[in-house]
Structures are given as structure tokens and as C-alpha cells.
Image 1: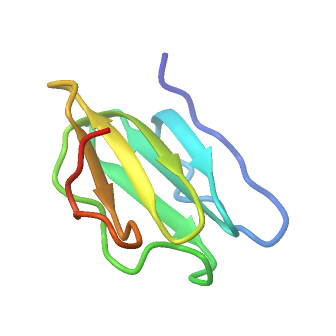
Image 2 (image 1 turned 45 degrees about the vertical axis):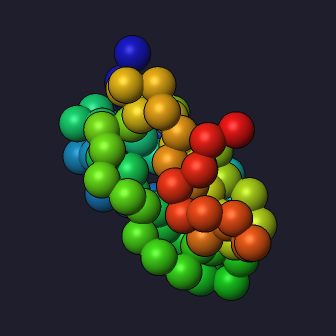
Length: 91
């Protein structure tokens, strides 16, 4: 069920009117799947992926140090900024 979340500390929250179905916390940044299936990321740029997420729609997202991966509604996996790996890769 979508809900609005609140972040505190060094990471500012997105707009209060933004609803998410999933979120994942990385190294000083956060990515979330919005109710329309797009991914929004916010926070510090250190440790965050350098490129924006690929086109979705997504059902989930998981972030790490300088990379992120998401599961699309067709069950394929899209990753971005993965060191020494294809931009879109399957595991």
C-alpha cells in the first residue's frame, strides 16, 4: 500500500505529496518507487549513482554504494552505475 514517508538527519525528504510503494537507503542517499512506477532518488551525491534511473515502471528498488538496481513490472532487472557491469544486466 502506498504511503508518504519522512526522512530526517542529513537527508531531506521529497515533497510531502509524493507517495511511494517501496524505498531503499544507500550511502547517504535514498531511492523510492513512486506510485506511478517511476524511481525518485534524493540525498547527498557522494556515494549515489551518477546517472538517473532508467525508464520503468518499477515494482522495487535496491541501492548500494554508487549503484542501484530495480525490478520492473515485467520482472526484468535494470541496474545503473554498476562498476564493471553492463548498464542493464540480469542476475
